[in-house]
Image 1 (tube, rainbow, N blue to C red):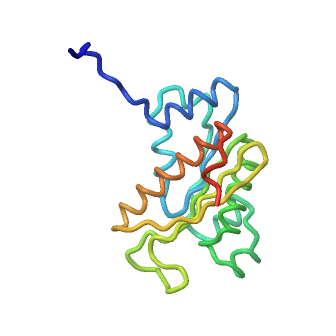
Image 2 (tube, one colour):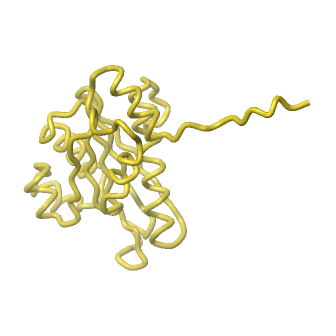
Length: 171
């Protein structure tokens, strides 16, 4: 016989908020292909203002360079959608915001813009936590919105694992 109690899953953004608040730490975001979706999801959590002070939407190369300090040489040599750019975005966001953690995404959400070397759905997710950065290369299928949503979900999962001290998300 059922006890009638429902198990309620705590949203990942609330888990992130609780852990960071408990450690008196902060987080920031640097987004390109998601256009603010990660930040918007984080602010769904009540109390997030204690740990999330600012985020950056850096859609253009110029914004990545100006706001996050991504090197012009990196953008020219590797492109905006690259492991190197994602790493510099995450590190630059953490530095600019003075945050303990930063999650950064850059990719091709489509439907256009892909090439054989960098197809639609290619995304790099950079995560800096306490000065250490990892970058994960991902491929997502579907339409533009699906790619953006899947990128946001994966980015929050990577951030959550990093602040818990798990490194299983590293590539």
